[in-house]
Length: 359
Image (cartoon, rainbow, N blue to C red; front, top):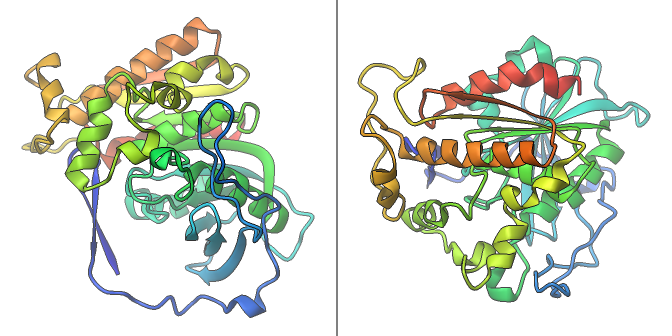
């Protein structure tokens, strides 16, 4: 079992308590051959950005576990991850994977930096939301603090290739074998908000709507927010995009601010707090813990800020929102008093569901 403890910054620490067998997984031999049609590469592109790990064995589903009446967990053997990854499905009423002709509107929800595919059930209980009974909801796992990116890995590329796993392995499998349709929307909280907007920009036209709630939307604005959080959690952050000076071109290719023009034609919603106590913070809410690097940004913000992470995320979100407006992207925003915490993310997700479900 894994216990997930989130700090006030929305950074997440995973503590392994025990290894519990997934007794509900079906043996691979009894599953249909559900393989993704794409492969990936370990070579470097002409621009110097490494590509993901190539394999002659495409991604495929190796396990299915029924969690509840509408919840199904998939285990996918992934060349992009050089291992396996989980995907949680919240299936709509009437869904049946054995009817290959069915196609459902699909909402992809991206977890925070924990990468936990269970987070939207644990934090928000989305399986109880009546608005989602006619939509296939997909929550893909991400490697811890993976930043929704194909890691640079000192120029070598390879695993974890998170973007490749999600968009080139998971999406094709779901659209071929699990009823996912091509009416796609995507949203995410914290690091997942970054992933939602970035994926929509990196793959123009793939998603009709993208929404971010408290997202890391402009990594190059405050590289300390990336490196400080990573060092606090023991993650080798330079392996993600390299150094923000020497490999600036890679950072730019993974920064929604610098990808703004690619979002024309996509509806974007950005929501974030300002780091001060808000309506959903109980009295006596403690300030964020001090994180080296990130704490150096504290003098930029008012003394009443208790969630420096959300203050930084709010700053980045406003900058990206202004940039999207400048280049003619259809964007809506909601900026509010509040901290970097799940109650706000759940509220913002539910409020924007009409746009996500009916683009």
